[in-house]
Image 1 (cartoon, rainbow, N blue to C red):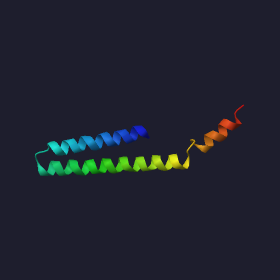
Image 2 (image 1 turned 135 degrees about the vertical axis):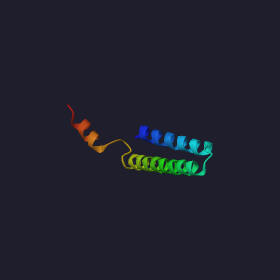
Image 3 (image 1 turned 45 degrees about the vertical axis):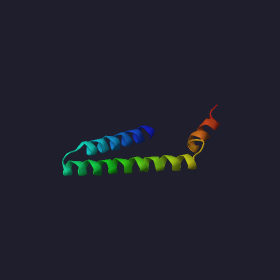
Image 4 (image 1 turned 90 degrees about the vertical axis):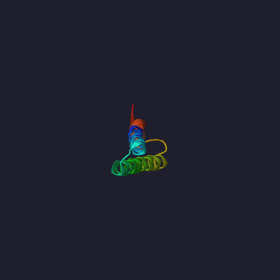
Length: 71
């Protein structure tokens, strides 16, 4: 998921940079909307990762069960 978070943040920054460089209002607005959408997706991934880390501080419980029963 960290790779997905990085991808979303990179795309948000790229869209923001394009908006900053745009000379036409409609192009700037389109890129600002894209940047906002990419940032919202990145925020959702980050929230999900934090919730998962809080819920499973030592990793996936199913994997712990498998590890404890391994010979």
